[in-house]
Image 1: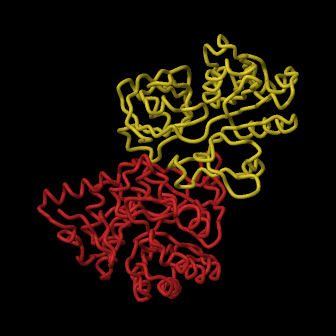
Image 2: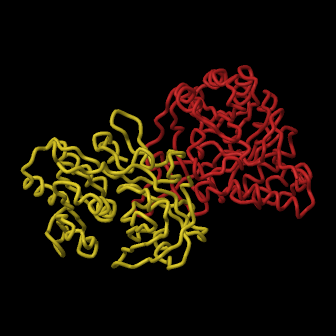
Image 3: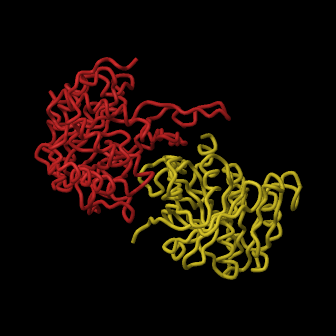
Length: 309
Length: 267
């Protein structure tokens, strides 16, 4: 049985990828997580300059998921390249997530990462606020998305993954723009804008007021976005959003996902990636599948009959 | 070495009102944990809550058993109170930093506010005989909120208990107890160390007093935590000089001088 996956020229040992933001700079879960069960880890988003992040509280547990507002806290690309990257020795691939406040910053970040042997791919976080457009997310606009991805592609020979925001209406426009610009794969999707209020203090819980919802709560919506994106486009789609166990993972593959990003679930259960890999293998055995291609997209492609109301 | 395991609950005793003592068989934690460090806990079978919860360690037998003293403050801790002998819990740890060890020249003043008591009690137990003197000041709102660990007095720890309403112990705040102890301690400031755990407003008063007296001060901080291992950057505590420290990795025990209390109190 073969659970390897291909993203362009890149081969991953398993379809389970650690989503950006939950796995630090790569090895923070050492002694807990079975890194060999992962196809890759995506680092937390790295920016050109160090970023302090948002005031606390930055995290709220809403039971079915979590809302976070970390604010892209990171040590900056230079410290990452100098202090963190050389010390990494992971038995899986490393993807680096990049983010910027201006289009040019993405381009420069991609250039600085190009050719570094321990890096296998670049994931472009286009959910960052664009300071040149009044703080609107880059990925909320197809034209800007195209420019960002074009800039990154021009600076790196590595596969480029476009991580799109959870756009309900117009997802195909954003994904299409990323693909036209040369994206090698899509990560669908990022966290969902959300808020938590405290009935006691009668105030927002998070220091930054709003944040991004992830975890089981978002799974059915992410599954829909992946199902739509995978049907519309030929490049690999990496499913992300509330994948916590093997059943979730299998559903995303049935929807057309080439690989899976596991994020918040790691906070609940650090054995989740290994459990998912084992569960997929068991499922394939029971169904008589020899590779993920045998069932990828099997539940995709039907016409939507407008059942939202 | 694995930092996580599924462990057996040996007991979950209600001490009084909202306070419980959880005993867990967790050899890898018990063997190496130091006072101030914490574990992330979740019930093995619970679908809710989403996140593990951090708890500082109250005691360890150094071999196989750790103890956690906790207060039921919300749904997660209410679920924890239902744990019974034989149940399983997922334990990650020991995590984070510890209070600096004591030495024989030191006079240690430990200041606990409410449920800040457990890591300080652990410290007192471990180092009472290793230092020149050890004082544990415990403050609480009322008698029913006051937890005084048993047996510490017998080990040479001077325990001072205070309540705001005077229903138990002396009437006053934990910081009033600290003021008295500082006045009584007629020793060189360099031979004194203050350690504290409690609400951040109390920690702010304690560190100001330490600063005024020229005494080294370490505090144990709390912020909403998610991963416990420095990966997610959730548990941010404003750092002196800008930026943030993280309670799980830089803390929970941090030198008071490294924290920007003004920004922290405003958050």
